[in-house]
Image 1 (cartoon, one colour):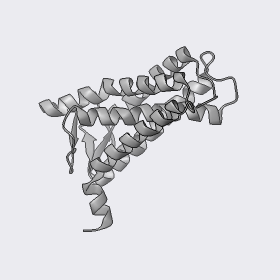
Image 2: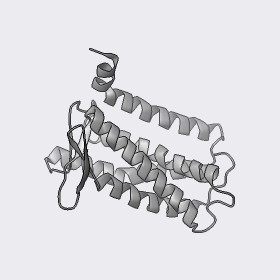
Image 3: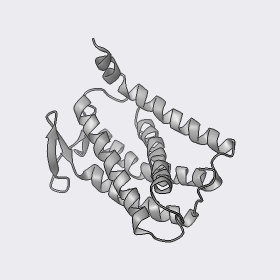
Image 4: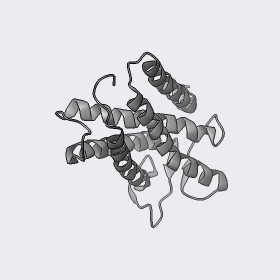
Length: 190
């Protein structure tokens, strides 16, 4: 057994450890006042938004509805804990989107609807989703099952890369952007 095989066999343990690390980092930054209250709230909004799709997808797998399936390793944690861990990741992914807006675009930020800010959120959501899905297919974690509403774009390692995760992140990125405007975070204490 190679190191790669060991990593793949234990990928969900590593996945959960990364989620715990994300939660710890965000919490420590907030407690130390290195992250202001608006970012803290936005992180939890991102977690909640992630639950909007993570719980239903997990539930459909539990019920045997053909939307998504695990390929090789099974999650260590049962439903819904597995879905909650992935939502913790989602909150962190959304915060990275805010960070990218600050790094890529000139001030002011999040004062009113700005097509460039929205574009950064959408591009980040799509890029990270494509990367995550391709990695998942390459190492055999999960895949989405093609259907009329979830067409396959191409195959990776004999598994289908479908549009469903891209739809999810497109809609979620837009929703999160507009929620970010409501909290009008500033660049201090990010």
